[in-house]
Length: 138
Image (cartoon, rainbow, N blue to C red; front, side):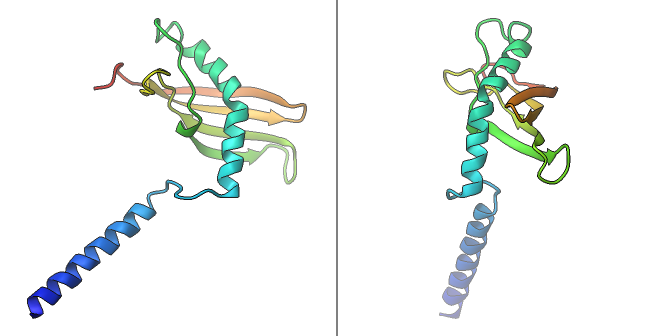
């Protein structure tokens, strides 16, 4: 009886620790105002990102199609104000994995920095190609 109780406690501990590890994986599990604002920003930047990735990837790396931007595959690395507190000149740096657009297979990984200012003006400051994935991925 004690063995069964001990096994049950051990099993329960493993399940609880697994659930807490899953929850703290860094991926959002529910909507928030911060997530909504981040998604809105990515949607508004998507045309600029698409144009810049297209000029980089096509036709140097990809000859058959242009890379597609998937806003949910954008990870914000840093946002900073260029001209101090409440200044309306911002720089945003993020990592993005452009896809093939059909099967949503990632084709590479890039780090991009944009400067956003009043106007609105959106300007690419830096683009670093981090990795090219073999297409189609295995």
